[in-house]
Each structure stands twice: as structure tokens, then as C-alpha cells.
Length: 294
Image (cartoon, rainbow, N blue to C red; front, side):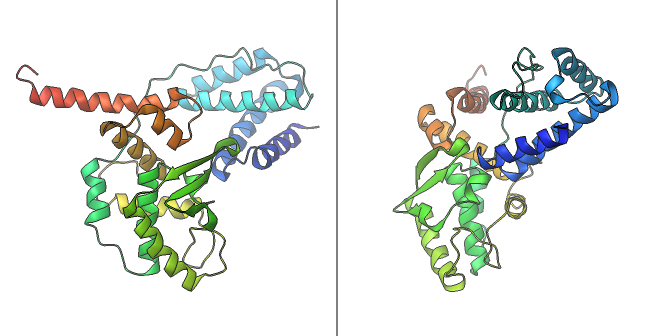
């Protein structure tokens, strides 16, 4: 089997078995095609099944010489680790050539988030259109901010997933979690659902476009960017920024770290702990401004 076939089979596995989003699959495909191109140019099209540790190390060296960001190199190595774990599972190889590879240590970047007063201004003072579009858009922003739900999770919500003051979310690796809704957001849900049922009664998806079709990633990106631009000058204005904003504001207001971990659907507490750095930065700032010897 040639390397393109291995890539196709692996991506199919990630899509069907792991239920990875289209955005993630595209990243994996890009990384694997780059690795395959490197093998073709450097080792005369060596098969993935014959790759050794030295081949992967030389690939890493080339990436670093191209002055790629450490985070990009780390992602590509992570992609290769996933590929070879799959090939080992399928008994194509006996040992993974990437197992002993250490990814470059990255400088920790604090998650970008929107200020609390900016989010309050957006949801309480900015005027959303009273049409179907406006009701959907306000609920979309509010739900992303008040639940920390992922982009891939919100676009796949079905009508039956939103009920009884809570939403049922199918997260990574098909892990299901329940997130409670506030009274305020539930009022937005009811207003939106009434409008949607009148216009698109046959739709099985909770969030739909103006034509009644399932929402897609670029649609949500555009909406989030548009509305956050009204209140924030941050360069990053993505759905994931609202996820960061949710976690940071929860911590700043005294929420338990383990509770936030469960709501976000994180596998490990270490993934949630990154938000404590933002909280610590806020404490340092308050201390500096307030203490007489700050």
C-alpha cells in the first residue's frame, strides 16, 4: 500500500471512529502530506511502514531549520504519533518509529479571553435584530460563552439535546456530558425555538443557517468575529476564545477547578489548570494597583 492510501485509511478512521471535526482532519492531512513529500524528496519515496527513528528526526531538523514555530513542529510530531499508533493497531508495523521522539518544549502561551465587562456589554446592551437571525445569533454567542462548548459540539447539537434547563453534549471520543443552563439563556432558547419551529419545522439540528441547513464552522467563525469586534480590540475573536473566556471568568468568580473541568469536557485537570495563570495575572494586577507598596 502506498503512503497516500495509508493517509486516506487513517483519516477515514479518525472521521468515523474518533468523530474528529473537518478542521482537525484537514490539519492531520496537511501534516501527513508534508511528511510524505519529505520522504519522497529525501529517501526516494520510502513507505510509511519502513520509516525509522532517524527519518523522523531528520524531518524534525528540517522543520526547525525552516524556522517553523515550536508549536507547529510539536503538532506535526503529534500527528505522526497518532498515525503510527493507528498503523501499529492495524498490525501494519510492529514498533512505532516516533515513540521515542520528544517534541520541542514550547513557551506556555496564556489563553486569549474577552474581558468580563465587554461580554456583559455585548449580551446586555448591544442590540440584536428581532428577526430569526438576531435571535439565533444572540443565543449562539450566549451559549458559547455561558457553557464553554466547543465549536464542533455546538454545530452538531440536535433539537433533543437542548431540554429541561440543560444541554447534552457529545464531546471528544464520544464522551457525553450534561451542562446546566441559566434562566436567562433558557429564555433565549425558548424565543429562538419558537421562531425556528415556525420557519424550519423539519430540521433535526438545533442551530441552523438562514436557509434552515445545519450550521457549519465558517458560519460560526464569521458570526463570533462580527459580534466580538463590536466590543473588543483583541486580534483573536474565535469560538475557542469564548471557551477560554468562559473558563477564565468562572475561575475569577470563584468556581471550583474540577467543576470547570467537567463542564469543558477535559480529560485531565492539567488542561484546565492553564486558566489559573490568567486568574493569577489578574490577582497580581489587583495587588499592584491596590496595595500601598504594590
